[in-house]
Image 1 (cartoon, rainbow, N blue to C red):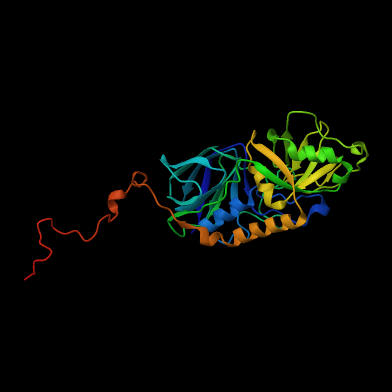
Image 2 (image 1 turned 60 degrees about the horizontal axis):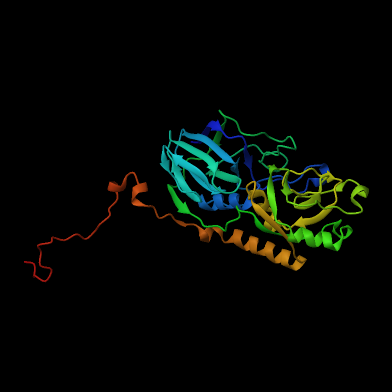
Length: 342
């Protein structure tokens, strides 16, 4: 027996995403995958599944309306917090829930951050080039649409779990390393890069995000002498108007803009998740600091199963409250507890 999640209405940026396709850069394909891989791993942990190979619906800015068909489904909501309800009853973000057969799940706009994730137990999709995720700019797969029906497994449990995570949805400090052309920028230009208060531009996508700022742009004497060469997610290019542009998951594989720095892998989800207008500050770190940060992320991923805890609900949020045994061991108010029974 299988279950089905039918998409009754799809937001503008829904796609299936997993860890992506590493190792294909030489073929002209960047890794792709979830913009916030931590959120996909958190969703898998909430479902009691192995984070390795986890697949989820990525929702950019807003979700959509979904209905469980053929069986009860177990879902998890992670990533950028969004409004959500099941048949009109509000449900908690960063938690797992039972979506009964025939019930409707509505996910609205992001309250913070950019990318929310809907994970469903047993969600499956065909594998292409070693992954099941859509790579929109690479022409692999497509965005999910109204009317799509996704095959899932019947709910293995009733959910009711929650997980805590750090706030990676508000921008803030982004740690960077020197890149290929960093030495071609003047020391005072590099200092200004760290001193400038940037905001994430609204012109952002799965390919990259422009950083806006007040004041002059950034440039180097060698700006016009750069040949097209291999680029990777995290590279910070200085584009034609002098603005820093952070390459993200679906960036092209070659580029000719100078790279003033590279965002460390541990902070790349923060860049992706920052909503337009969020503050961004860059800070150069050493390779040792970057490796320590990467190690901390790896430890966090390994600890996810231990971070999942039963969800404590407010009585007003429990529709079948009277079906629970709320009080036990009741005695008569007129009975003398010290009286010996006969």
